[in-house]
Length: 375
Image 1 (tube, rainbow, N blue to C red):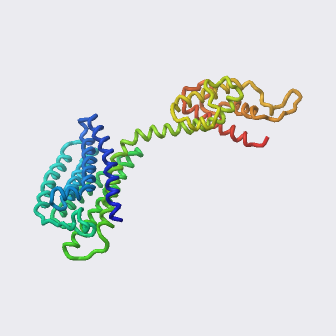
Image 2: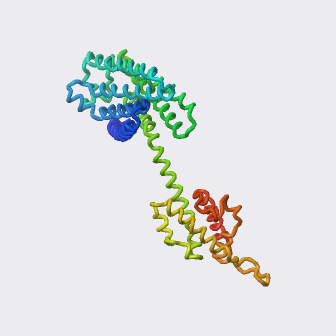
Image 3: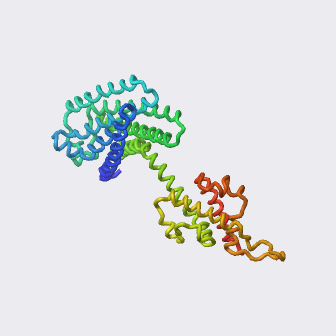
């Protein structure tokens, strides 16, 4: 990975996580007694803070005058995020406060220990984010061992809890959330493994191929991205439902246009507000529920108005069939038996809009085939 790309990716993740945390905090306020949602909100908040500190780690080191302070604070935020995510998963399976309380107590011991071990470690300016050598330098400190060990434990527990939750749910969106969580925990464990390898190799004087920027850093960024997407996916469910509904309405509105235009030209009085233009129909983006309902009603009204016409292709009084015109083909489609059109007939127009739309879409498809057929 190009070292120059890392700050850009971190800034992007920071902005994405910031939007997610705003939603989560707002949602948590609506349900003040929901501990699982509060834990998830804290996880996203800590993830956002940690990513933001990583973006400005060089400034933090320069302000404090202590190298790697930004790195330590970001690691602390990552530990809080991992613990809160684990608590969220624990609450989903076991709402009792006991198991979650043990995780908070463990975090209360680990965080101060990380800070104390960092302060007792000798300064290493070469590995500070503000130093050009940080891309190849390995920062060695006892607190890093503690951080990686605790992070590995929490991610392993979270991976197991997410897998258990996955087996208990059937809804597609929730399964997606747990699959993303499992993937994020997996890449997080991969990040801890690479960090351990380079840290141990550095302390033992053993040279290892590659460097952290090409191994652990991509795993770290991918972990944050996967967990952030997993956190915001539930919030996107209402938006996706609205978007899918709008898409279905828009496509149905366009599919019915050729049939509607043919009916309108054969019986102009059925249209309250004519939109006799394909371009105007394509540019119709608002009020689709109402406009689609009106289009269905107008087609059904045209069906009633035209059903008494006799198609020209039928035999006349002398037994001679005349060629069928465009209107005659339309009448032939409109006069097809109701059992072939839909489970609902013209008399029930509007009772079930979706059923009516499906019926008229089939009718529009048959009309399109008749129009393409040779006369």
